[in-house]
Image 1 (cartoon, rainbow, N blue to C red):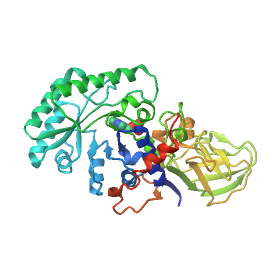
Image 2: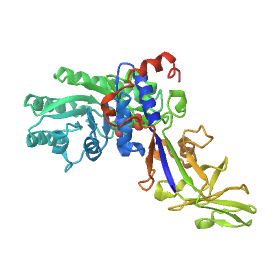
Image 3: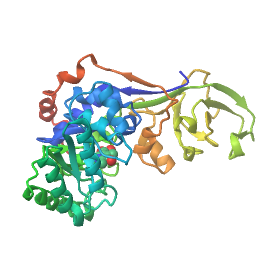
Length: 401
Ligand SMILES: *Cc1c(COP(=O)(O)O)cnc(C)c1O
């Protein structure tokens, strides 16, 4: 295999159990948007369900419908809607539609009429993120329009929710402001007679660091894949998480070159002495950031090496400094770190990015190889690891941090 992303589904399951333990009474909604942050949405969704995630979430309707097409049962929330999207298909598939404004409510209600079904909708409040969500000034009107749709049997408000701007910076003043704005939005909806199944706000950092944001449901994405959303507070292990993805390649060639030899486009690297160069067959066409040129760390022949010169579309070079290696030897770009390899966090630091982007950008050309799947047949309904939460709690495995 030229390059591959190995995804450990046992890690995904353990991460979901750790998150359930963190969430205490609240249920877990596993976010599997963007192909499960690059890990493979379907396999990770099944693993998350198996480990007791009650809900799934996707950004786009296409992603949500793909979960249903693959047979994933249970509630699925989808929040990024555009006019012209498959609203009716989503209503038919019992996908929970996030509604941030009256235009979206009208689309959902029209889809309910078309399909003869009740649209499951979740009203989203903008409590300060300034992205999607309904502004406080428009909230009461949206709530009452939703109540009217409920009265007509066209909609069922299953959730009230919001999203943080700075939960990854514990103590940021916007966190308390957003929480109190959310409480205010909940009160208005409650007074109007809305009785949602779930109220939720917590993404991964809030799930891990802010219990008062848990409400009925937590909504982690990154942490499901075992990456820390608050690296300045702690790494994955500090939160009882394990990175699920290992990105590795097989060297496409190794050769001796003399001193003063330019390497890759633009010759931004020149060999300082006679040395050995190894060719790693992965480039920005595979999602390797070009910003890793001259900085990205790679484990080759037992040591960390650095990308020498520019990352090209399909390949980059590392300087082995005279060490021996052979075509076909493994190069590990990142993984959980326990074989001494760099982590996605190391790549984020090397490229001026965040771990979210490092794993999500792994390209479609890179095969995902899922390991440690458990009996996927019927796994989604089995939830046979639910009780493991008590074990995790009893062992104190996810305390602290
Ligand atoms: C991506 C996303 C999440 C998950 O965020 P993480 O930080 O990865 O846990 C939750 N809610 C919304 C609205 C999102 O867009």
